[in-house]
Image (cartoon, rainbow, N blue to C red):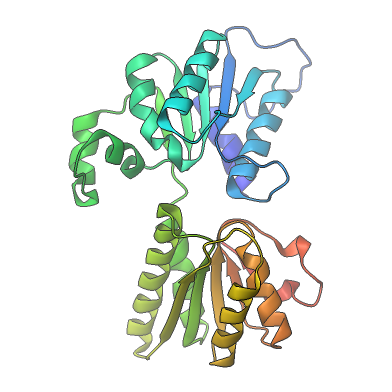
Length: 288
């Protein structure tokens, strides 16, 4: 489903049909610069899904493109890569990752005629880099003031909403002891966590029931004994279900749940990992 959404957004933004049946040379007048800081082609993630969808669509529609990964995760490196793509003839930019929020103002001012699709970038990501002491409560006011323009399209994955759905659904399904685990304490994971807590709170109010929430960050991208030990304790204390997000954090959750014989639901917040799991646990995995 996500890949269909990605394809539709690209097609509409470039004003092209979703599928092209005729074999032809590259379309004239269109050259796309694709750029991402965190792309790991061996990893399953929403950014990898977006990348695969973008590249597949560009190839299918015979559109010339250049992919570039900045030399480092800094504003200066991202802006340098954008300049290089533009000097290479790219008149469209597709950015992948929320860190490009701080590059939008640069693109708007330096390349106002280039169409840009920014995946996983919200207005908040842009405004935090534009306005000092920006407050999200002023978002609508700033949207009118800033005037993003017709050439830039922000595609926000709405992590708060996804987290809310996860937390809300777990309580509505009868759970009262739930947990949240993320790989690292980052703004993206904080959005998931905030939404998760709000969803749990809303559902518990509707059902007039008490709930218990456990919440932690791993400070690691990989499966590790420290995190598994913490989850073992959580499950031992009666935790029924867990929302997990961030790279390989899900491996800790699945390992602990399986080891403890606790087959509660594990909600994975970024992508569907069920194909990587043992068949005995697949039915207990939800994708949000």
